Length: 286
View (tube, rainbow, N blue to C red):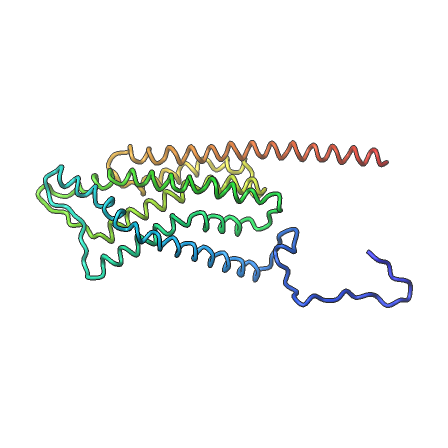
């Protein structure tokens, strides 16, 4: 800071042509509402581009996905000696279904892109030495998201079997292909997203936004929500499918609690050491 001689005119710093500060220029990561909206738009565009590129690859896999989806229905029909198959109502129904399948596959394939964009938008103020949080989030969330999709996919044949069992023995099941696909893919995406929620809690704790104790206090609500979600996601007459889905979700939640509490203790020790070093430095300076 320069001191002006007495009586001299104050030096005025030249104004910058652009008053708007970017996130890179603000060490604290603070942004105005307009900048948040611009940031949201940019990250949304990047995510959309990633999904569209994933759709192109997903379109090539639609035949395989459709055959795998139809296998449980055909196997049940053969085992019970009854007619059951997928049905397309209109001329464009098959093409529309292919687009829906490719969109879902595009979302799954582009998961690294939109998961990273979501995390960087939620926690915009990370310092350079904290950017590994984003990499850790993406590196952990992607396997868990795919694991959730796999769990839902494994539950799908049993759900189909139970649902078809309610039809009379002598009847034929001609299932609307679009509705059948919507049920399966909604289940897969919902379970996949549910599996990454504990990772979001851990990353928010690492960023200093929420404590492990606060996460643990909500365990009753978490158990209730997981039970409700598992009950709605597995419309099965037995409870085995429900508990098969609840078990990994609750395990991930309490694992997230444990990691958050350990991180809070580590942060508290680090802060205590910093305060002790600061007090020692002030004492030596005095």
